[in-house]
Length: 287
Image 1: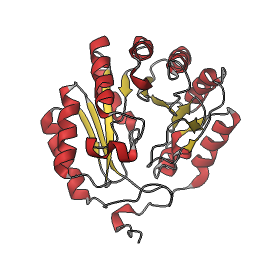
Image 2 (image 1 turned 60 degrees about the vertical axis):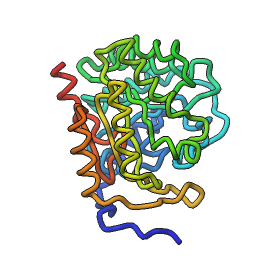
Image 3 (image 1 turned 90 degrees about the horizontal axis):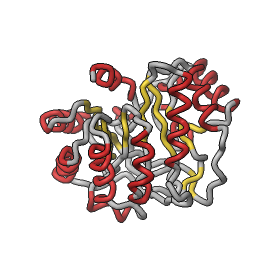
Image 4 (image 1 turned 180 degrees about the vertical axis):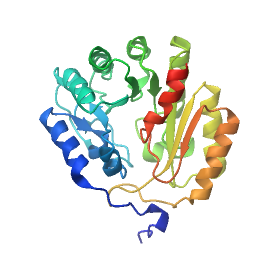
């Protein structure tokens, strides 16, 4: 039997005026957003603010993670016009902070690193002063591919750990907990000035002790920013919610994470890896 959502997970109605404007712009430039493709619960709020998290390298993922609503299958080729179009949208939306993520592209030798670099470079050319955050896949542990992205010097490099080690095989087949931690550690070795960020979902059956251990592992590899949000089942074919975590527990997680030394923590039922990501710009500008 499906669990009934508690009151704190009710989404407020948003005026569609700005939403329609953003959607028209994205469609006109043949761009995808994780907001739409992953059925993010915050997409109405973010679109109303004129913000979006761009998803490059198409809309089809080569992985089969059991929590994600992005389409799985065989992707198309890489769109050479995508970096320029993404830069145009960034300028049109007057974004002060832009987030660029992608589907996982295990079919590409460098996992799509080259396209990330081109997008970073195009945004830098057309939107001076806009900070850039990239949310990247694990690149199958390819350090040369990671080095390409690090050399492009995005202000923030995010790679989500997603869940606790005991649940990796269940919900993240094809991924590896230690490999994800190593990726974040390698970023700091390659360029200590880049802020690193990671996030995880709760409500999948993990314990609070396991969550806090993940926080500690992330701090051990120098992770600066952290997001913690409630897992919500996108459809019946996805893994079911084990528990709806009370907002007070999210507050406790935030307190513990700050005590561990994270520079910025976003922890709450509707928090996602790029939700209100522009709040970190204050820390970026202060560096």
